[in-house]
Length: 247
Image (cartoon, rainbow, N blue to C red; front, side):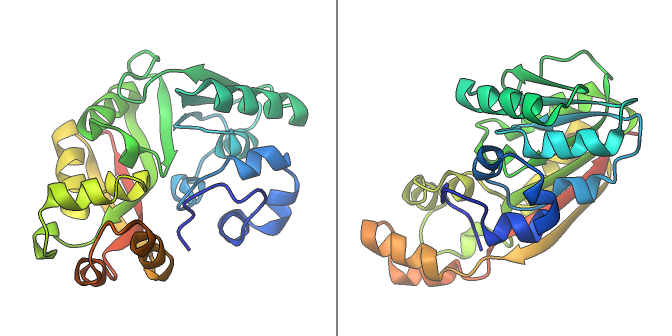
Protein backbone atom coordinates (compact mmCIF):
# COMPACT_ATOMS: atom_id res chain seq x y z
CA UNK A 1 0.00 0.00 0.00
CA UNK A 2 1.27 3.45 -0.89
CA UNK A 3 2.00 5.39 2.30
CA UNK A 4 1.00 9.00 1.68
CA UNK A 5 1.25 10.43 5.19
CA UNK A 6 2.56 9.83 8.68
CA UNK A 7 0.05 7.60 10.42
CA UNK A 8 1.56 7.91 13.90
CA UNK A 9 3.19 4.49 14.34
CA UNK A 10 4.77 1.54 12.57
CA UNK A 11 2.60 0.55 9.63
CA UNK A 12 2.30 -2.76 7.84
CA UNK A 13 4.45 -1.16 5.14
CA UNK A 14 7.48 -0.70 7.41
CA UNK A 15 7.02 -4.11 9.03
CA UNK A 16 6.81 -5.78 5.62
CA UNK A 17 9.88 -3.95 4.32
CA UNK A 18 12.20 -4.44 7.28
CA UNK A 19 10.64 -7.12 9.47
CA UNK A 20 8.87 -6.78 12.80
CA UNK A 21 11.95 -7.76 14.81
CA UNK A 22 14.09 -5.09 13.16
CA UNK A 23 11.43 -2.40 13.56
CA UNK A 24 11.09 -3.27 17.23
CA UNK A 25 14.78 -2.39 17.81
CA UNK A 26 14.41 1.16 16.49
CA UNK A 27 13.11 4.32 18.23
CA UNK A 28 9.43 4.80 17.47
CA UNK A 29 9.77 8.38 16.23
CA UNK A 30 12.35 7.23 13.70
CA UNK A 31 9.93 4.65 12.34
CA UNK A 32 7.03 7.09 12.13
CA UNK A 33 9.25 9.53 10.25
CA UNK A 34 9.82 6.93 7.53
CA UNK A 35 8.04 7.42 4.21
CA UNK A 36 9.69 4.70 2.16
CA UNK A 37 8.33 2.81 -0.83
CA UNK A 38 10.84 -0.04 -0.74
CA UNK A 39 13.93 -1.41 0.96
CA UNK A 40 17.02 0.07 -0.65
CA UNK A 41 19.26 -1.79 1.80
CA UNK A 42 18.11 -5.16 0.49
CA UNK A 43 19.00 -3.95 -2.99
CA UNK A 44 22.38 -2.51 -1.94
CA UNK A 45 23.76 -5.69 -0.34
CA UNK A 46 26.12 -3.73 1.87
CA UNK A 47 29.45 -5.18 2.98
CA UNK A 48 31.49 -4.54 6.14
CA UNK A 49 33.81 -1.57 5.79
CA UNK A 50 31.87 0.21 3.06
CA UNK A 51 31.12 3.94 3.08
CA UNK A 52 27.45 4.63 2.39
CA UNK A 53 25.41 7.74 1.61
CA UNK A 54 21.63 7.93 2.07
CA UNK A 55 20.05 10.63 -0.10
CA UNK A 56 17.07 12.11 1.75
CA UNK A 57 17.69 10.23 4.99
CA UNK A 58 14.69 11.64 6.89
CA UNK A 59 14.51 10.32 10.45
CA UNK A 60 17.54 8.10 9.81
CA UNK A 61 15.96 4.65 9.68
CA UNK A 62 17.98 3.27 6.76
CA UNK A 63 21.14 5.09 7.90
CA UNK A 64 21.11 3.28 11.23
CA UNK A 65 20.27 -0.06 9.64
CA UNK A 66 23.09 0.48 7.14
CA UNK A 67 25.46 1.34 9.98
CA UNK A 68 24.81 -2.07 11.52
CA UNK A 69 25.56 -3.78 8.21
CA UNK A 70 28.84 -1.99 7.42
CA UNK A 71 30.07 -2.35 11.00
CA UNK A 72 32.65 -0.37 12.92
CA UNK A 73 35.03 -0.33 9.95
CA UNK A 74 32.39 1.28 7.73
CA UNK A 75 30.63 4.62 7.79
CA UNK A 76 27.22 5.99 6.78
CA UNK A 77 26.24 9.55 5.87
CA UNK A 78 22.63 10.70 5.88
CA UNK A 79 21.80 13.77 3.80
CA UNK A 80 18.61 15.75 4.36
CA UNK A 81 17.52 19.35 3.83
CA UNK A 82 15.10 19.65 6.74
CA UNK A 83 16.21 20.65 10.23
CA UNK A 84 13.40 18.69 11.90
CA UNK A 85 14.41 15.42 10.24
CA UNK A 86 18.09 16.00 10.97
CA UNK A 87 17.29 16.65 14.63
CA UNK A 88 15.22 13.46 14.81
CA UNK A 89 17.92 11.41 13.10
CA UNK A 90 20.75 12.69 15.30
CA UNK A 91 18.71 12.16 18.45
CA UNK A 92 17.91 8.60 17.46
CA UNK A 93 21.50 7.81 16.48
CA UNK A 94 22.48 8.85 19.99
CA UNK A 95 19.71 6.70 21.50
CA UNK A 96 20.97 3.54 19.81
CA UNK A 97 24.64 4.39 20.33
CA UNK A 98 25.57 4.59 16.65
CA UNK A 99 29.06 6.06 16.32
CA UNK A 100 29.74 5.36 12.63
CA UNK A 101 27.15 7.80 11.24
CA UNK A 102 26.89 11.49 10.40
CA UNK A 103 23.87 13.49 9.29
CA UNK A 104 24.53 16.33 6.85
CA UNK A 105 22.29 19.22 5.91
CA UNK A 106 22.10 19.85 2.21
CA UNK A 107 20.42 19.37 -1.13
CA UNK A 108 20.58 16.03 -2.93
CA UNK A 109 21.23 17.98 -6.14
CA UNK A 110 24.49 19.32 -4.62
CA UNK A 111 25.86 16.61 -2.34
CA UNK A 112 28.28 18.10 0.25
CA UNK A 113 30.88 15.33 -0.11
CA UNK A 114 34.11 15.09 -2.15
CA UNK A 115 34.42 13.32 -5.49
CA UNK A 116 34.70 9.52 -5.32
CA UNK A 117 34.17 9.40 -1.56
CA UNK A 118 31.53 6.66 -1.09
CA UNK A 119 31.08 3.03 -2.09
CA UNK A 120 27.31 2.92 -2.10
CA UNK A 121 24.44 5.39 -2.45
CA UNK A 122 20.99 4.43 -1.20
CA UNK A 123 17.75 6.41 -1.39
CA UNK A 124 14.17 5.57 -0.53
CA UNK A 125 11.30 7.40 -2.21
CA UNK A 126 13.11 10.76 -2.35
CA UNK A 127 14.58 11.36 -5.81
CA UNK A 128 11.06 11.71 -7.24
CA UNK A 129 10.68 14.85 -5.09
CA UNK A 130 13.74 16.61 -6.53
CA UNK A 131 13.12 19.38 -9.10
CA UNK A 132 16.18 18.36 -11.17
CA UNK A 133 16.44 14.58 -11.03
CA UNK A 134 19.13 14.50 -13.69
CA UNK A 135 21.37 16.67 -11.52
CA UNK A 136 20.72 14.38 -8.53
CA UNK A 137 21.99 11.41 -10.54
CA UNK A 138 24.91 13.39 -11.98
CA UNK A 139 26.07 14.33 -8.48
CA UNK A 140 25.49 10.81 -7.20
CA UNK A 141 27.81 9.56 -9.94
CA UNK A 142 30.39 12.18 -8.95
CA UNK A 143 30.66 11.09 -5.31
CA UNK A 144 30.69 7.35 -6.04
CA UNK A 145 34.02 5.60 -6.22
CA UNK A 146 34.82 3.57 -9.36
CA UNK A 147 32.81 0.37 -9.11
CA UNK A 148 30.44 2.05 -6.66
CA UNK A 149 26.78 1.09 -6.51
CA UNK A 150 23.51 3.02 -6.61
CA UNK A 151 20.53 1.34 -4.92
CA UNK A 152 17.27 3.28 -5.04
CA UNK A 153 13.64 2.59 -4.23
CA UNK A 154 11.37 5.10 -5.92
CA UNK A 155 7.90 5.72 -7.31
CA UNK A 156 7.64 5.51 -11.09
CA UNK A 157 5.08 5.55 -13.86
CA UNK A 158 5.18 2.24 -15.70
CA UNK A 159 4.39 3.08 -19.30
CA UNK A 160 4.17 6.32 -21.19
CA UNK A 161 2.02 9.21 -19.99
CA UNK A 162 0.74 10.00 -23.48
CA UNK A 163 -1.81 7.20 -22.97
CA UNK A 164 -3.51 9.27 -20.24
CA UNK A 165 -6.40 11.42 -21.59
CA UNK A 166 -4.97 14.72 -20.26
CA UNK A 167 -1.65 16.45 -20.88
CA UNK A 168 1.31 15.51 -18.70
CA UNK A 169 1.37 19.06 -17.29
CA UNK A 170 -2.31 18.85 -16.30
CA UNK A 171 -1.78 15.43 -14.75
CA UNK A 172 1.18 16.52 -12.64
CA UNK A 173 -0.61 19.67 -11.53
CA UNK A 174 -3.65 17.65 -10.44
CA UNK A 175 -1.40 15.24 -8.52
CA UNK A 176 0.67 17.99 -6.92
CA UNK A 177 -0.83 17.31 -3.47
CA UNK A 178 0.79 13.84 -3.58
CA UNK A 179 4.42 14.81 -4.09
CA UNK A 180 5.80 11.30 -4.51
CA UNK A 181 3.47 10.67 -7.46
CA UNK A 182 3.43 14.11 -9.02
CA UNK A 183 7.21 14.04 -9.47
CA UNK A 184 7.51 10.41 -10.56
CA UNK A 185 9.43 9.66 -13.74
CA UNK A 186 8.52 7.04 -16.29
CA UNK A 187 10.82 4.03 -16.20
CA UNK A 188 12.14 4.95 -19.64
CA UNK A 189 13.02 8.49 -18.54
CA UNK A 190 14.69 7.20 -15.36
CA UNK A 191 16.92 4.90 -17.41
CA UNK A 192 17.79 7.71 -19.81
CA UNK A 193 18.88 9.99 -16.95
CA UNK A 194 20.99 7.22 -15.40
CA UNK A 195 22.69 6.58 -18.72
CA UNK A 196 23.29 10.30 -19.27
CA UNK A 197 24.94 10.54 -15.84
CA UNK A 198 27.37 7.78 -16.80
CA UNK A 199 25.94 4.77 -14.95
CA UNK A 200 26.14 1.22 -16.30
CA UNK A 201 24.59 -2.14 -15.37
CA UNK A 202 21.27 -0.36 -14.94
CA UNK A 203 18.29 -2.37 -13.76
CA UNK A 204 14.76 -1.17 -12.99
CA UNK A 205 12.41 -3.75 -11.49
CA UNK A 206 8.81 -3.11 -10.46
CA UNK A 207 8.36 -4.35 -6.90
CA UNK A 208 4.75 -3.31 -6.28
CA UNK A 209 1.90 -1.82 -8.27
CA UNK A 210 -0.36 0.40 -6.22
CA UNK A 211 -4.13 -0.04 -6.32
CA UNK A 212 -5.91 3.24 -6.84
CA UNK A 213 -8.84 2.72 -4.46
CA UNK A 214 -7.51 5.07 -1.77
CA UNK A 215 -6.08 7.47 -4.30
CA UNK A 216 -9.37 7.50 -6.23
CA UNK A 217 -11.27 8.47 -3.08
CA UNK A 218 -8.90 11.32 -2.28
CA UNK A 219 -8.94 12.54 -5.87
CA UNK A 220 -12.73 12.49 -5.83
CA UNK A 221 -12.80 14.56 -2.66
CA UNK A 222 -10.58 17.17 -4.28
CA UNK A 223 -12.22 16.95 -7.68
CA UNK A 224 -8.74 16.99 -9.20
CA UNK A 225 -9.08 14.32 -11.90
CA UNK A 226 -11.98 12.75 -13.72
CA UNK A 227 -12.83 9.10 -13.20
CA UNK A 228 -11.71 8.39 -16.77
CA UNK A 229 -8.24 9.78 -16.05
CA UNK A 230 -8.05 8.06 -12.68
CA UNK A 231 -8.99 4.73 -14.26
CA UNK A 232 -6.35 5.22 -16.94
CA UNK A 233 -3.72 5.39 -14.18
CA UNK A 234 -4.66 1.93 -12.90
CA UNK A 235 -1.54 -0.23 -12.72
CA UNK A 236 0.78 2.56 -13.88
CA UNK A 237 1.88 3.88 -10.46
CA UNK A 238 4.45 1.55 -8.98
CA UNK A 239 7.36 1.16 -6.62
CA UNK A 240 10.58 0.35 -8.45
CA UNK A 241 13.94 -1.08 -7.35
CA UNK A 242 16.62 0.79 -9.30
CA UNK A 243 20.24 -0.33 -9.33
CA UNK A 244 23.28 0.85 -11.28
CA UNK A 245 27.07 1.06 -11.06
CA UNK A 246 29.76 3.57 -11.70
CA UNK A 247 32.22 1.81 -13.99
